[in-house]
Structures are given as structure tokens and as C-alpha cells.
Amino acid sequence: MTNIILFSNKDAIFPPIPRHRVFYLGYRYIGGMCCQDVQNIYLKRKGMLHGNRYWAIITYDKYNNYCSLELEECHEDDVIEMIDMFDLDSLPSIKTLRSMGWRGKIKNKANLFYSLSNDPDYLKRNQNIIDIDRAK
Image (cartoon, rainbow, N blue to C red; front, side):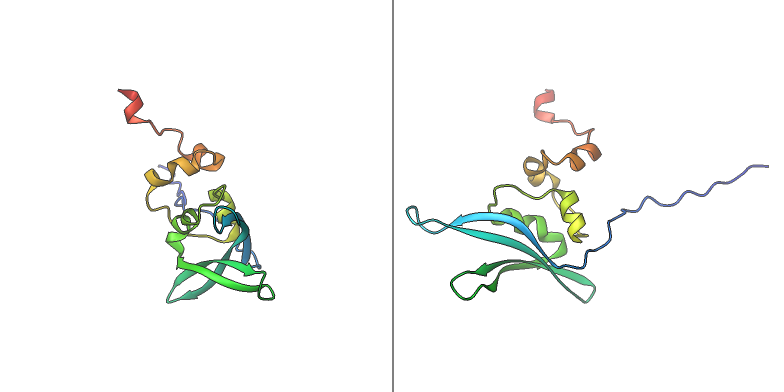
């Protein structure tokens, strides 16, 4: 007689979604060459619409009583591309985004490899990546 052992499917285990919805991403320089200004950039987790979660990049306008300004909005799977579009000094790690409540998928790993090369979580999972150009 054989014993059958059932293994659970290896689903992605995410940390619980935190209560706060606005997270600091970093800063960027805006303005002309001589009068540059620093703009703090935040990532906001918006609500669900038809089963899809939306995210936004916001900043606080210091010239208008610190009202929030929404700079860009996107679907959950496009968050990494949206963050990359704003030319921040450092891209947040996948682990940091997961702890913020991001549950999206990475669409194109080739475009993100340069920015993710310093992410220890990403490197640990993808140790078998071989650079084809260097292997020749």
C-alpha cells in the first residue's frame, strides 16, 4: 500500500496589506538648469475598480497649502514602469513594493534587469540567469 502525500501549490505568499495608503518613494529634481527644485514623490494605493487595483504617483504642492497633486495613475501591473518613468534616484525593491501592498506582475524582466540588479530578493530568486552575450 502506498501513502499519498498532497503538497500545496506554491502560490505567491505576500505580506499583509498595510493600513496606510501613501508611501514615500524618493525625490526628483524639477525645473530649469539654474533654478532646480526638489520634488518629493509618493506612491498611493488607490481603491479597487472591477477587481483591479489602481495606484498613483502623487506629490504635495508646497505653494498651495501642501495639497496633494496626482501626477500619474496606472493599473497594478504597470506600477514598476510608472515609477521608472519618474527618474527617481533609486527604484524601490520588489520586497519593498510587496510590503506596500503591491500584488502586480512583472511584465518584462529584460527592461527591469538593470534597476533590479541591486535587489537582493530578485537576485536570490533568479540565480540561474545567464547573460547570453557574455557566454559566447
